[in-house]
Length: 488
Image (cartoon, rainbow, N blue to C red; front, side):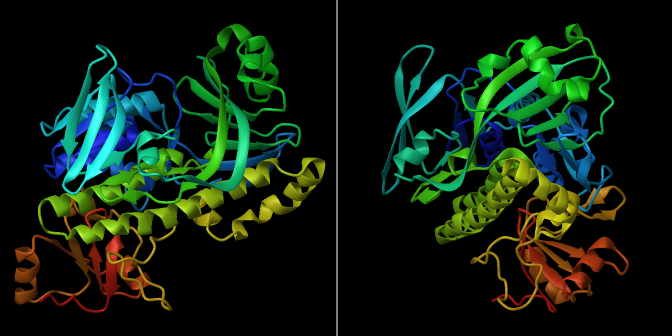
């Protein structure tokens, strides 16, 4: 297996595959970690993925739980507030966390080094991918020596970002979903206390929309929409930048505010028209670009990795047919599109309409909790269920748990669902299986988890109208019903 790109998505995919014993080579064009911060937020569903990688404590040490989202008008008045729980939610982690991406990539790399089946090679720029019936020839250049090399792979995962060579190699194209904005992204370090609400501030000023959040003990992030004719170069000096951030910094002297970065980014809403060509797959920004307004850009890439890794591992060990790899695009593309549309909605609601839009925001923002899907994501961090597929058995006209994540509930002592399932299929049931059923589940290598009356899992099953749920290795419910599934 070759993975192109060693950002969070590629490192996550490599680690998950290595946990299943799949040999991986990760080729990264940069010599080491890209030093500038980019992604700064993730939710508890993705925090759960990091814990699955073995990074529960390490990520907790570099991240800050946040209180949720506030929408502010240009006078800094709160139009709407969506609070999140900073304690352990249904997945065992805060519903939202802020962090510094280079620090996250550092712990991902250190963790990957624990696995002898995974090799990370920097300064290796992939130049071509050539498929045949048996695999893919990956051609790359060693940027340090200039030497041209190649390697054969059974599959290739393209985690190589928005300008993906992998995407070009399979002739996939990005579909524009109708959102393009230029924004200034600013990272500031200060020992001073800004004394602000410890959540994400979305600032809706018809003259210039903005975002603020505290991402570390001394690190702060602002994002402001650039006006026509402006560039990031106009704001690299604190004297030019200060008028933008002074609403939050107040009387803190300029000398105490250090600009780490002031860079221009174009926020886009795009989705690749296809995510696979035979043995080559697209993941992360190579497959989708999400505006940052709901903090789901990097999250989507880690969800891609979690969805695909166990399926590839099953194909490698012969427990799953290769045809089931088609479910990756079916499931993830629909989910990614839903999240992009929601991010686009928030971005448009923040920035559109000038003064008229500002009047509308004042009237509409307090009612945003009525928007389908927004309340779940903003206050409960729950994202939509996966699309129906051969690995998500959902009835068309009845509500079901299938396609949703099983809660990472406490089972006994400090052990949670993920600790017991341990990357396997799991049967969660509220009735006592017979000895024959137990033996059959054990023979098939699945985990059997009994949902005791009064427990979180028991209540989850009841709420979903089920007594039994079959849970996939990625924590997604494959099917749910009243009886244990029969096996041939």
